[in-house]
Structure formats: C-alpha cells, structure tokens
Image (tube, helix red, strand yellow):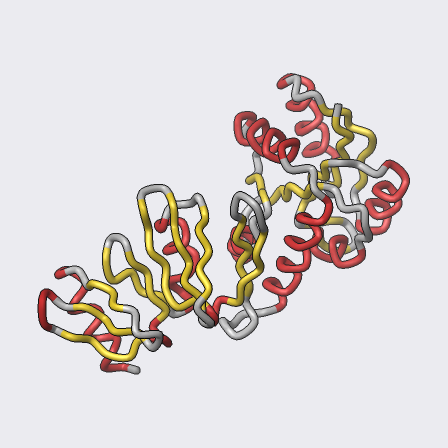
Amino acid sequence: MSRLVIIDDEKKARDSVRSLLDLLHLDVEVVGEAESVADGLQLISKTLPEILLLDVKLTDGTGFDLLEKLEPPYPIIIFITAFEHYALKAFRFSAIDYLLKPVDPDSLADAISRAKDRLMASEMETKIKSLVVNLSSHTKENKRIVLKTAEQIHVVRIKDIIRLESDKNYTTFFLDGNVSILVSKTLKEYDDLLTEYGFLRVHQSHLVNVEFIDKFDKREGGYLILRNKASVPVSTRKKEELIKLLETL
C-alpha cells in the first residue's frame, strides 16, 4: 500500500479527494493532510509519502513554492488545479501529472495508477527541476521539455529541437547536434505544446522549428531544407501558411 499526502487550502476539496480514494479502493493510505506550504513541508518530512496530491493554491503561497523547498526523497507529484492555464502547459512540458477540479474519479484512478508504476525518486527530481525552470521562463530560450523513453528520461531545451516526425503513435525528436529521441506519444500532443514557441506543422507527419529553416523548395510538391540538411515535405494545404510565415522572418 502506497503512502499518500493531500495538500490543499480547502478542507472541502481535501475531504472530497479522500472520499474518492476510499470509494475507488486504490490501495493507498492517506497519511496526512495540510493546507499550507509550511505545514505541507513538515508533513512530508515526517511521513515520507510516496505520492503527493498538491494543490496549486495554498494558504501561504503556492504548490510551486513548496516544490522549490522540497528535499529528497521526492514523492510522485500529482497537481490539482482549478483553472491555472499557464501552469497546465508547464506540467505538460515537464511530464508531471495534474488533475482539474472538480476531480474526476476515473482521472484520479488513472493518475494514481501511473504514479504507482513509476515510484522513482530520481525521475521525479528531474521533472520538478524542469517544472521550476519552465514556470520562471516565458521564452523559448530557457524553456525545457521532459521526454521519457523506455530506458531514459531526457530534459531538452526547446530551442535545440530542430524538428519532430511522427510514426503512428510514436514521435521522433531531432535535436541540434545530430541527436534523436523516440517517444511513445503522438505528434498532435507536441503540436499543441510547441506551436506558440515557433514550431509549425508543415505536414501531417512533420513539425518543424522555424528557426532551423534554411529554404523552401517549391519543386516536386514542395519541401523544406533545414539547417542540418534534412528535407521535410510540405503538404499542399500548408504551403500558403508557410510562405506567409517565411516572408515575416
């Protein structure tokens, strides 16, 4: 049975989550609750939970403030939030689970199940550090994305990503320096994350960082030549958008 702590500034919310955990029989033991950063840190130090359900807003600060003060061993973090849009993107970039309020039972069960499958403190430390950087950075220069493969976890700077290529449910990241990383997620998920940071979906299977575009060749249906000499096809419906973008660079 996994030890679990709930840190939320609203007692009603804590009671609701506790009731769901009891109802779902998730084989977890709630070993404590807290409503503030200070009390939360003391509770974590005392109980050493394996899983932490953490609200974004606390009585004396935020869940992010707590993370910055947290020391090893790290529990698996699952954030709980009402509407913090900017935070949701940061969670996704850092591969940290989150639940929206009101908490959906199925989503809670899935998050707890994933947490139990990866009770690795070293992995969580990497994700927490990435999250802290992402929350303090609003440009592509310092933004990081966490990519997990079957054997490793990578922290990659957004500005170092040249392009992404999909193969059904897998996506390959091609990075500056002739490095590639294969992850078991769809291209659409990364399209949603990276578009506002200068990436363009030029084809159903290709997402490119516009900073690495060298030229657009209109022959043979049209394709991009990137700075690393890679050739990327451009779909017919994306040509006009691409040309307009290149004219503004």
